[in-house]
Length: 454
Image 1 (cartoon, rainbow, N blue to C red):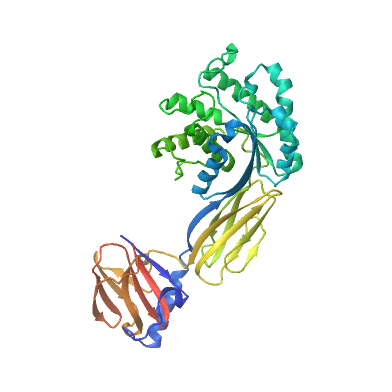
Image 2: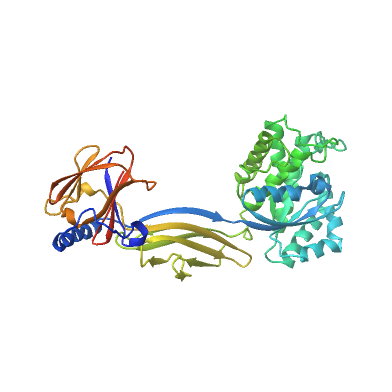
């Protein structure tokens, strides 16, 4: 156990104005005590506690695909998972049963949908078999239209990012061709084809098929398919939605309270599978793309003397930033230094912008004069506070009549029983009947002080 202190220079923050003194003193003793406290202050640095939260919290998504998207309403599952994780989403769909990339590329309504909003992501899904067909066939019948759609999304809005929906192999593969006649064979060709689409169009991939393989390999008791062995069952659509959440927000869906009607244990496994499939291989899926949502964070440091705080930002994909220090002052500097006029609690906000979006991070910081080990500091051999035993302390060097509103409180603000003994004019013995951390609280000439025992 050791002693630390906090000095508060704002009366209303720490202690009430004393009405009836516990002790009173002469002005000389008061000045002596205040000078001593000021000398102690120079030994310590600014204390800052912070509570941080990061807010990449919204996305607009257009899903262009077919029945693999609209069965079980995949976009709605994605939205509900996002809401449960504190995210805001706006989604729309263009889904036609059995639609190929060529169908969507030749349909004017595809481009009308792309024009209908400034989408963060335009999700593109091929017909379930076509990307797994022979390379030559894919190169002429699928790839050009995939690139056309992705390029159009970016041309319509420079802030739209095309994201390919990597689908999964059929439950028993496709028997019409030896190279895709098992799940693993078909899934592998789909994986490579969607990566090729993304690479050819500077786009990204949501690796749903990879998540399916993980679940099939590690949790075969979970059936991802509907009765036809091709379309997703509810578990398959939920897994897909979790994969889109991780791919779009770059965060794990684990912990989502939305299970989509599945048993919570099953939903938890599918959330984990999506997180592992996406977040461990972000570079493989191209998810660190230049059009990704801006990300921002910062840390705080102190100058060691007064109320000056140094802020250091960490940002990605950012063109400009804006600081709000919580006291009416702002800055656009990269890593500014700011001096607060008074101690207290401040909400510091950093907003980062690029051409397409912005992101905000907030830290609630408490700026107070510092903590230190009282027993290590002396002034002319006089301790301000000295430990005598585990529960007995002596307040020294201050005329007892100068001290007002003396009490001991625990860390929840509840008053702790104590026994006072006046040993001399300048020495007060205090026995504290408490076994946890506590704070000595008093004021001298209406200046509040707190002496904290850890």
